[in-house]
Image (cartoon, rainbow, N blue to C red; front, side, top):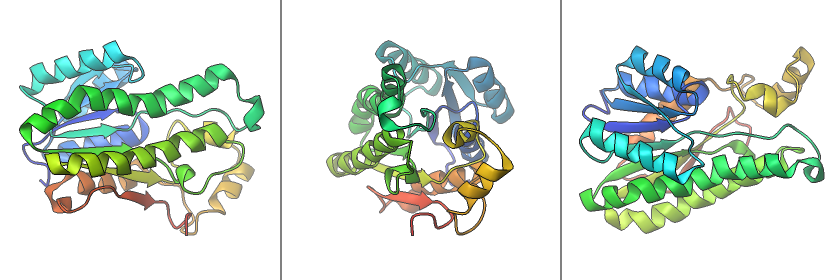
Length: 247
């Protein structure tokens, strides 16, 4: 029960890594608010873990503000933990062939969302004098794969933002860390690969020394540690959970 009594928000919590994080946090004692554009999926996860669900577009200021207001009502205060997990990618293609709409969507969901949630939740964390923020970045921000250039760049931004936030917010008692997953068994896997075939899977797995894709539980375990009091001296870290891919 490492998160006993904690209040946590997990964005993109209806599936994939986010669902795994929500389930792990609840199992460790946290009250969890699952925020996702997919409300029915969020409600399914929330009902499973005894949490709350809220339909949220993390790239929209008014939607994030509504999430903050809902959290204030349900939690009776500011969350102890914020996990910025929601993310999207463009399909693998030459960088000059990615459409402007796809580029804008990647930057809005992967980059702007971190700014918007910071504006919504950091002031309250500062006033309380404590908080933990975990950004789900990617090994793509450390060791970019070809033909995913703008996705890679968005995750590199998230890693730098994590370090910048950590330095600025540490005096206020707020820790900020990131987790860098390798490609995982989530709904985004097919988008990363372009097509899900045995041949493409073998090609991807050949870059991961441990020889398997990451699972939601792998990322959830890392996020749980970083957001728990066990990591009270850890901030500004971008933890690679990647089976050795970035070595």
